[in-house]
Image (tube, rainbow, N blue to C red; front, side):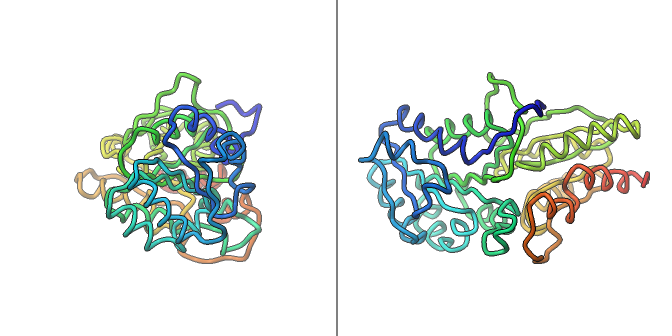
Length: 315
């Protein structure tokens, strides 16, 4: 992991929309009056005839995008994750997922990354909502290269995709020649004493935690990037379980997210392992900066170190 430079994935994805437009002439962009927030202005400037702004009307945005998809276009809809997943929930389910349409739902402000904007702008339920819809693929990038490769995947994939995006800074993790494989997790760091299963913003914290656990506690802990939240990579989860101590780290409520999906896989596999989900503990809290909230709920670097030591009986 290269910590010399910070990246913001909404900038990366919003800027890459211009490349998507150049690669696929049938791609169109639909905004809900959040072009600045979603950082996708370059597409609008380059392809004004393929850009639509429906105003602050997320339900209409999704239904409109579904109509475009029915006519053969590939619509990329942009809005904050809480509005995309909750305000437009029925339209996503009935107009998009039910019809298995190739609509892309690009949703920054995932998890608690909305920070001081408060609970109205947090999205701690979206994985639970979106993974419950048949036909829906749910992705969560952790670095700029992966985010761009995911966008390339959305150009050709048949069916709806929900792209969950943190607005907190991330580091470069993957090399330029990285290839994104949908449904396949990436083991970024090998380990035999325990495993972190993570996605999005928690990947960088898991890598830092694994480094500390090795240097200061002599524990070899693997880090697996579960970038495709749905469909989950069952083999990756089972492989992690064989270490005997698994932590699923997520910027999401402990209900409905990566941890619950991974726990189901482990239970069904019959493998005995110590397991813990670290995320938002089914509660609302007062607004605060995202890093403070990550620390409070225990899925920043320090929290993941502590949780692994507890799971290993070393605390």
